[in-house]
Picture (tube, each protein chain N blue to C red):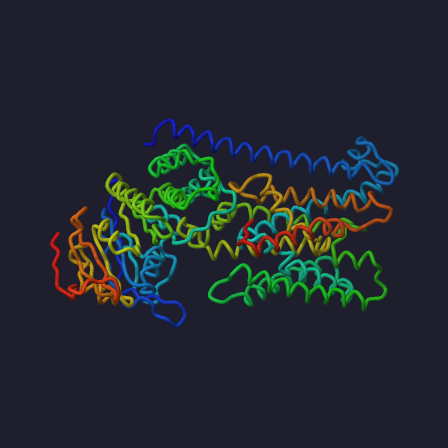
Length: 345
Length: 278
């Protein structure tokens, strides 16, 4: 039996850490809700909270029913959904591969989903369901391809990342090619598949992504503790009773599914998956699971970046351009830092 | 804890790719004792330890814990009885000692179980036993090598297993920290009855701290028994390809190996048979 003073210290420390994490998650959740509400109210026309609530509850409000109900609400819902999906999936990959560069939008998984979605919509004119299915298949194939190419007596993070960046560049060029061949598609549509955009989003796009999040997020959350254990290295995790391979496959399938559905709806919103995890880790600390905080950070990033892109400048920029401006310098910083020391999230 | 578990390997063959590293090896770990495995580099001692803790599936043969195959046991159930500290565990950047040691509770928790008072007590005992309680709020990155190793051992202790396997727990530590770690493991063995199995590089420390010494050469057991039985000039010659003289360690009474190289050796130090009793 431990000394009471040590036990007290341990209990106090644990309770303190847990309540700090809960508080930060709560603050993030409140910020997401506030940002969500603001994007519904504000825009070219301002609608007071009363009108917005009315629309959400299904009342007919002149003007607001169309602007809020048909334009702003699906857009905001998809912003939260895609942000949450990217954030969770990104931090899953980063944690699992123990490298912040190993995010699905850096190693080609988002690019795969995006290329498939662009081909499905622009060239093949498929419907929403078929687009999602194709995006998932492509994302899984890319994940498998990168993993196989990087495999040599186990997977080393750096090799996987470099191969992923190469594959990603190839897939981006396929997307560009498909878009350049389809003359009738405008720039708006092109930017969606290149950097991600929420322009012209309807419920048809938002609903499948939301459904995927509702199904797949709990799958990831049940693996949260195993994922935390994997950060100690495969051997240590295994010694702690984690079925490493099974856990990894479950995590990859769920995370790739989230990426694919969100990308099929909103495009590969640049760097959200990549940025959310490290930001969440800064806020919450390394101790607990980062899944929920990273999801919330992702949702907040997309909401705020989309709003900024729409209204902060003379021209309307798609959300991916704004997040890209934030993410690119961080990518450079990380690559510079990784070359100095073995980086981890 | 008085429960004693039996850990045995039967006709165990292990390898990576085409290479066979351990060949048809039989091994019994004496319960409640400190067992040390020694051998030259790449002789298969770490591979053996990895397989005994389920990290590596055997090509042939089996590893049995209380008569059950470890590779078929439910992962968490095994992890409640048998703990392993790998050679180079990874500490996530910025993790605190308290959080890291808490990870040792993983096999005692389910998906939905909440952290309990029992978990707190196990973590507190582990911190206390390793004298790391005052480091609890520090991050692992800022600790010295010796402190860090104590923290990893604390994590393994929080797992509360009756068997503890350690792969070179003293590597990268200076002399005093090596002794500190080995003393700690001996305390653990004596006070809690934990069966300790570890791979060590330093033959003299192995002879000092082992109740049961196993010398491995080319993937099979060359000699096993008490340090006095195992650590002989013949064993050192066969296992390490090194000429040596064995004397009685004036501090412990255990055998002490003095290597004979090509330099700095007195002329009269011809290979002479010196027996050590103890």
